[in-house]
Length: 219
Ligand code: B16
Ligand code: MG
Image (cartoon, helix red, strand yellow):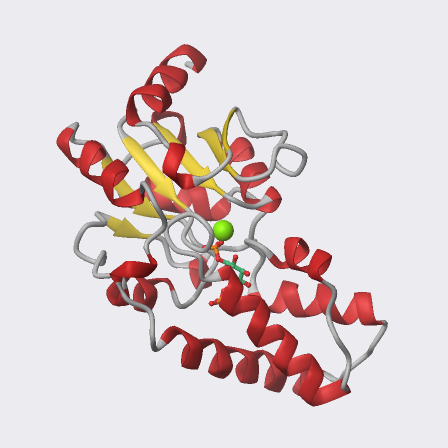
């Protein structure tokens, strides 16, 4: 295992709460409608525009292109306000320890997040200098579940996906890792992430030794 391709939201930090809070506020303000908890899973790991499309489809609401664009900007403004209070204390349990182990074994770290706010979030978490590369989601042709962002993240550290492990908390993300050719490690619910090659219930359980051994066995 020469590189690890990290998802951000739900793996490095629990910013998913902020994402959904921002969507809820937007939909309440615009349409006075509530979003059910189960819709959150459909927006996890999925780009801002694809998330809004899923939400509007669920609500059976149609908007013009310009309203749609205005809404994605507004959602991001709310999300950025919520992010203002983010500190290293928001790094999920076990992640700092895993990063230290990876660094000690000369494994390269690359960010494979769908979020255009990735660099800003890593700065707030004081992890920006820890990463060797950040793949730019605005430069890839297709978002998760397409493999593009994981291929770009591996490429940014001069590795092929085969030499890498990807860590994800979303269904779309696990599908993306698997089709990129990297080894998928899921963090979360077994029913949701059954396609992950290796699964942990939460980030505190992530183990460098286990992940490396599972990657070796797979290859
Ligand atoms: P932004 P990840 C994803 O992050 C989130 O899970 C998803 O909810 C969000 O819509 C997407 O980033 C885009 O984020 O609006 O900040 O560009 O899980 O891929 O790290
Ligand atoms: Mg995620």
